[in-house]
Length: 151
Image 1 (spheres, rainbow, N blue to C red):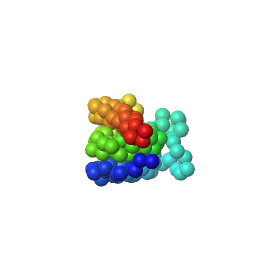
Image 2 (image 1 turned 90 degrees about the vertical axis):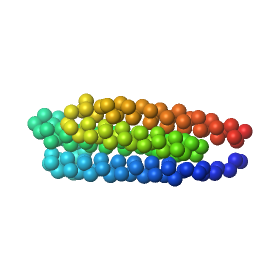
Image 3 (image 1 turned 30 degrees about the horizontal axis):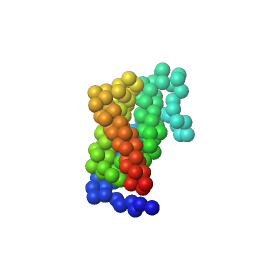
Image 4 (image 1 turned 90 degrees about the horizontal axis):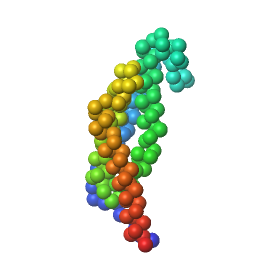
């Protein structure tokens, strides 16, 4: 059974993972602020269609809430891919996750405008695909490397 050694530079992976805590905290705070502005009471997750049609604040709340929810839906796989890639290529993993986090910040800011189409903007377009594809392909390659080392 091969021994797993955490490589030098893995602290960069840890720091990049911590950046997602800041991202999620910022998104959660924004959801709370927009919930108050839209007067959407707990435990409702979203304003209904009539509320969003009548109130720009309700529409912005739904958009911020959706940006946060979308991040929560994706974060487990992003964490896993970052950790796997970081076992062999920590600097690359940290950079890829950093790119993904930047894309999520821009996505959230664009979405928070209340115009859903603004969630995809120049910054998200140039940071999301390189970040997520590096995590996906790099973690797959790292799994292959680890399997080959074990044979």
